[in-house]
Length: 154
Image 1 (cartoon, helix red, strand yellow):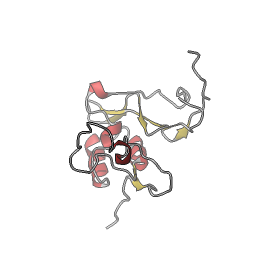
Image 2 (tube, helix red, strand yellow):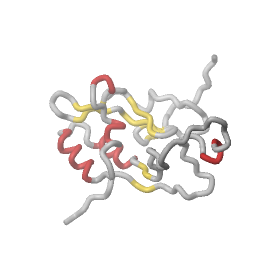
Image 3 (cartoon, rainbow, N blue to C red):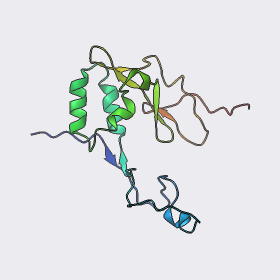
């Protein structure tokens, strides 16, 4: 039986200086007056997984039957939640693009009335995207932005 690769991958979380956000550390807050105990340890964030393969998989299945796409994706994931980072569950959640991480953007997706996976804005391309800073390499669906950063004139 040929088993397909997972739609996520492990990233290096042990490199010196790697920070994943998540608010303040205990060592920074323990001496504060009036601090309320947070309860049991254990966070909601899950570090060390990159879902880029999932995002590319979903983009490659635009136009396909949603039930089949969803079933295949769920089997190849550790949890189903990341699917809905890109795929809107309701018309109110539809966005032309979604931001994943600091500088990676992907097309927003939704399921149409015929149960087909579709892009929210099929005409949106990397040419229309504008970076928010000059220090990062911004990408749209894995392709680097073609426009250069221009600071606002506020």
